[in-house]
Image (cartoon, rainbow, N blue to C red; front, side, top):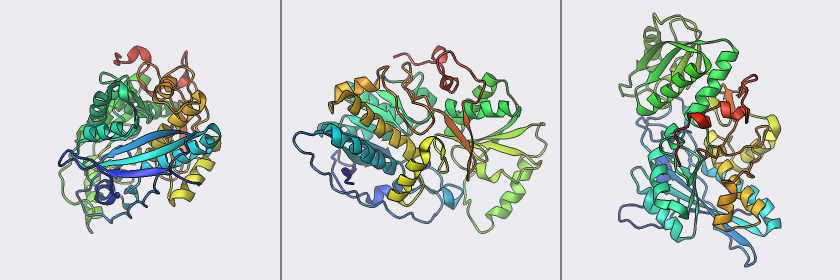
Length: 433
């Protein structure tokens, strides 16, 4: 099966753009996490560079050619605590490539052809200039694997010329006070993830939480979402502590010895609680907590039991076939970022099929209209919320090896769909389009 993919590396130094191999930009983002904290401050084994993508095949004259850009921007952040958590160099891109193949399977019968243009923007690079270059190439569907500020800058610069599909940033403000009419959100927001976790905690009647959060801004946002979820579903945060990131190497020969002494002291004399809820999006300390706390404690949130859009062992609702195809193509399992990029590209393919068009305006309008839905191996058709552009979806809660449950939990009802019990419902939304 032929894939049509181009890879570009955006070079902002002189304001010019061009095409090149992945090269150094992929090394710069090889340590990016699912929520895009990426570059390591500690030395870590290098991941193999992504395989070069084949050159784009030119579609026949009677075939509509639909171009989709996947734009990824690297950001600075510490390395993951575990060597097992170092993301592959093509994280996100591989999911988009598989979705393009899926689109082209149907596209052959619809006289449609889907091209993927992969764009790397380095740390501090000018993503807006990269966007303008894409628009000049007649690329109007932009899948972003980038932080919130980059998504906003691209959306504001694009205006009505592009549809931005945010497949990376979980920030609630993108769905709230900073929402944009030309942006849709494929991954769950922090509020959705927190609500999914809270529903299961309440189902288990683990309603007294000891909240430990990191000291970085993203950790504070994740902690705020967890606090909101506790209030919303009737849990109580009995105590909150901050784990300060003091820097330094975290993977030395004696690191485990220091942690084994430090974590029990840090968690000593906590208020009585059912679970420790961890807000460590920056991956500084969360994985240290299981089995090291002063009292024996369940750990959920950023470690232990984790809410996520996708789990590499998810098998329900036909997911095994998607997992097996991804592994066959990439020799690794599918990450949440891969899945979110897959959904973004499949969204465009589904709309193009339904409208029988490869033109930007009709495909965009169908995606944003009431008739759109997406089959995504989660047991039901997924739809976009019209008030904030968020894709409604179940959230998987899992340990590193297995899924444990899927939220919404049984009994959480809603007048429209139970999926709207996750995240900000329309009456709660600050989005004013």
